[in-house]
Image (cartoon, rainbow, N blue to C red):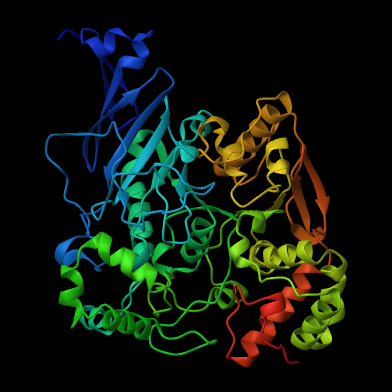
Length: 552
């Protein structure tokens, strides 16, 4: 094989070597030399071989921690020593173990193979980057499913906005969030659980230590995620162990639900350790040793079938308090925030909404019983005349709308600019399917990946309006990662939330406005306040027609 080697300085501290091969049959079918290029980069973690297409360098499947297998199952991530030789980073690494989807839905895509050895990340780097801002994407999937290799998350087009894009895998389900008395006994801190969250922190530490070699600025890192990724962003903002690893945050469709404590029953939530012990008993495991011997896929499937809830744990170390308390007291990371949700969140998540009442009269009676003196305001916001739409809207607001506005208010209160949005865009295909602005439908726009959506996703048209909206959203997100202020040439100015409760609506085009859904935040904030005061009620999916009675 003949090769031509091109060597040029990549940053002040590292050089990149690009090797272009011409002679193989596979290479000869390419139409351009740049499609055959490979990038060799020396980083503190070790030497990598990625790909170069003339505009972007891509490095995929880079391990950021040791394989969490064997004795390292349910241990905090362990840093890898610098590897010897050159590691291939041209293909995605395995996705983390997760339940197999038996009935495909609009979110289903092929993320195989999966493995317990899955702590890897991917990096998209614009050519000639030096001191570039860094955007770290945390995938969603209810902390149970998902992968950084989802085609919709491909970072190539967003990186062409002049930022470095990183996407990460982290342990999920029972492998990522099991707390158990036996595991706590092994810990020097006497705690367990939160392994998936600790993985995310380890990935951010890897970025901190290595991203300069890629041409990135380790002091200008934005964490971003959607759904469970947005929940993870809040956990990271709240965790003392993540402090200083990022300078900005983006939370898309995040949900500030109540979180179980390690050893105490609070807010109606069983202690995480008790949940883990009950799971172990149900699986007929005598101890942690038995659980560590179990096949990872079988264990994950069994735990999911038994209803194991993969959520973080308030353990006093990784997380010290409920998210609502941490943000209320101003103890979260003091960083600029971009936050928002979608108007049709529940249209694709109907399992989260309670069934409608038999009649409008029964609907109103149930709300009066459950909301008491708050019922008139509830029924004003969510009237019985459009019962199904009201149920969808209330479930959306209790989970996502209240969370987004609370985060915007809390960051503003500590002197940080917050930028609130509502994604309210629909395509003809979405409308036909009854999925206007559904959960996660903003992702192809902010990543620029309309052609990389899952197979059952509503088809996205290639119109000029769609292109303009995509370009604007990519520009806003990249600009925020760059400077902490979302800006897009030729599109509406996005004001900070500030004293006017400003927000950006993404309909057919970006449009700035004020006071999103007046009264929405106040109603749900009061409902959560009363649940917190009772000490016996969680605040998550038990809202509206399935809310426990709220007392003054």
